[in-house]
Length: 259
Length: 336
Ligand SMILES: Nc1ncnc2c1ncn2[C@@H]1O[C@H](COP(=O)(O)OP(=O)(O)OP(=O)(O)O)[C@@H](O)[C@H]1O
Ligand SMILES: [Mg+2]
Image (cartoon, rainbow over all chains, first blue to last red; front, side, top):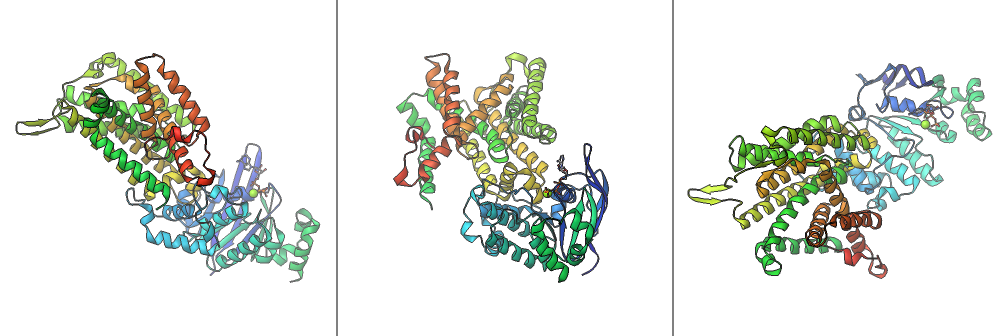
């Protein structure tokens, strides 16, 4: 697959005097696993909020495939197949894991039947079971989402993002707060998903980023610092200085540089 | 089926049998006056259900439901008194008027969230309350509209009307039961699940593809329907329509009944409305400050049982037998 899946042109977002996203232009080609990295406050989450319609940009354009999605409402963008997870995990806390998933699935339908029992929808039930299995959460199906561990909430949120067969998945620090075992499971899941759909992932864990990304975009102060393959990024002096200076990240970066 | 579901079915069956035999059992056990109190409780339960649909299922705290109750009342009163309508068209006019008003005010109100929403519902209520009080020629002003009751059904010379106390009771019971059945279907449907999604997390709801605005508006109109039916029934029941039922404090009572009974449960409003009206009827004959008891009870329930009486009962039933030591639960247990 070639061509661009998501194209951003001259996107700007200001919060008062602060320019969180600064005349940013990016092009994410089809069928790849893209990572977006950058120091705290670089504007990564704001970028996702602009793409998914949670925030309105001050100027600029977002194009998803051949749809101009700038100015669309979040639900309209979601219905085009752009799904996301949040940095601050966001699920339906008082509902069970299975309910979270089935509501998410049914909400993607154009018509919400007002009188037929939701539980009688066999296709949804089967799909929920399938995703529970995929996410290794079957045993948690009946548990209230608000009582899950942080890692399980993150897993559930990924499950909710994938249950309606997204075309493009935006993951905002999906493995932050996960145990090593959970991280491994989530990374495997993300790699598996990346075979069929486009993924953009924001992540601070450099081991994960350099391990799975096809290309990496580095943001700083709302602007593009550089983008390229993991090797190019690892070799980039500017990035090393601005962002990858931390000793704990050196190993992965060196590994990537010599790969 | 879980033990709780079984127990609740049992209670529901007992409750249904009780309701179906009220016109005979209640005069025997108490006195005939209580039959009409129970009819009134049914209407207030429906009114509280309207507040509950918004607060308990969609997360919108409305102090404006009295407005739609009032439109239901005036629809009937004006329909009969000014337009000379018969029973059913007047009933229909009341319901349609309430839903139309809910739609129009909802378009503005549901854009707002939380306290802004609550405030604007109060504002709408106040505006229309003062219009109703001042538009004397249409609404009868402070006196309201007293009207002669048309028959509900007439077959040749045989007529059924609210003049027959038993007919009145069963008509109200049937209408309220149908509304509760509809609400039961809606809250368990995909649309009802979308209500919960919006209540729980509106940002997440929009990200999974729900048009939060439209969902809230649908719920608002549905709640307007429930309040409108309640208002129309109350107009037939009292043979009059009055602006005093349109005041926002009356909406507040419905919210309190729903929360005390158990917001977000189908029967919470029934429990809450029953409790408060029984207290009012029993105490008000002896003591004029009965609302004080109501207030204290409401505060106690909100502190001790944030999920309301139905929630308390559910926690109590769901607690394994070996640790069943929830204080005060048995005393507070009521019919579903
Ligand atoms: N809603 C908002 N109102 C005001 N300022 C905001 C808002 N959202 C973000 N900001 C500011 O915009 C800047 C970019 O924030 P953003 O959350 O996009 O950064 P980030 O790259 O995701 O950082 P992190 O790695 O810490 O998640 C920050 O300075 C932040 O304080
Ligand atoms: Mg962020």
